[in-house]
Image 1 (spheres, rainbow, N blue to C red):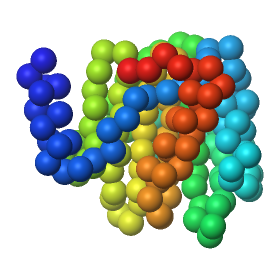
Image 2 (image 1 turned 45 degrees about the vertical axis):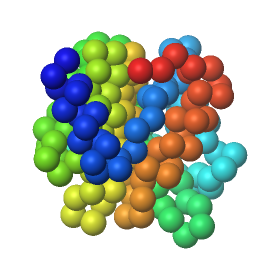
Image 3 (image 1 turned 180 degrees about the vertical axis):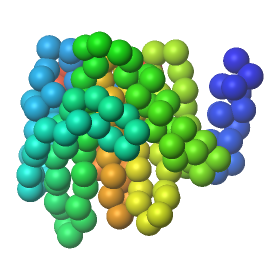
Image 4 (image 1 turned 90 degrees about the horizontal axis):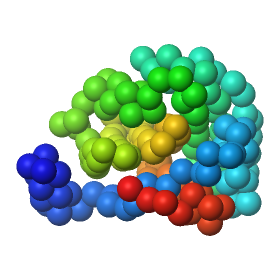
Length: 158
């Protein structure tokens, strides 16, 4: 509880992104989830990957473009293992003290940071872990993605 209160006040002081976390329904495939945002952004490519940084998990990445800004959208669906453990590994790698947003709840998590000229937003819920990376503000694209997931039926939040 103390951790939540401290996080809440830190968010108020820094003016960080505070929003509910949405993921697609579990019936969605990873490919469908990554391609579900094509209506507002142009899909450049999509391919399978073996992980993100120190997170070793089969997943996929898609590259999107809009108004000259490029976004890498990583997705992982954990059938074995824990999406939260993968998210914690990302947070550990980039550091909590450099975060713009850090919300760690028992059923979901949201993290954003700017490091080495990259904006990174990572969130998890249920079996899903997503990461958005961009040289421009990745929170804009992450918000669009989560709003899209809410529309397609991932309305359970936090």
